[in-house]
Length: 110
Image 1: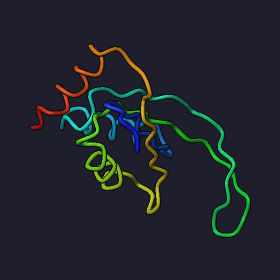
Image 2 (image 1 turned 135 degrees about the horizontal axis):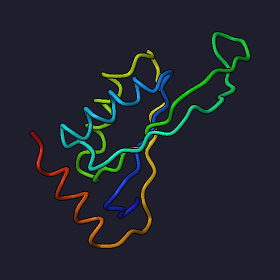
Image 3 (image 1 turned 30 degrees about the vertical axis):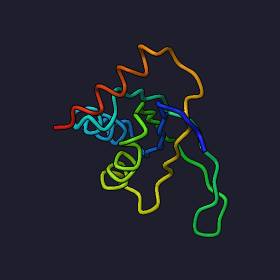
């Protein structure tokens, strides 16, 4: 079990607008302290039994352990796909001041 205080939660979306919607909602609702959007990127994947490819935008959000699962649920609610990629990676090390900022920001939920 990890003792990480900060997590990076990521998802990919079909458009930059979808990524912005998720990022803005998560940060404004204090489920994430901050977000970054990158893309477009080319993705190659299996879909409906066929090899496919497309352009995707990645949204990466920083959150704290207590709200990580709520953030994942909110991403799922906002996401246009039925089965979106939502993954979380613990930040193994970051400065104490950064971790405190993430924890403080996500604790102040609206």
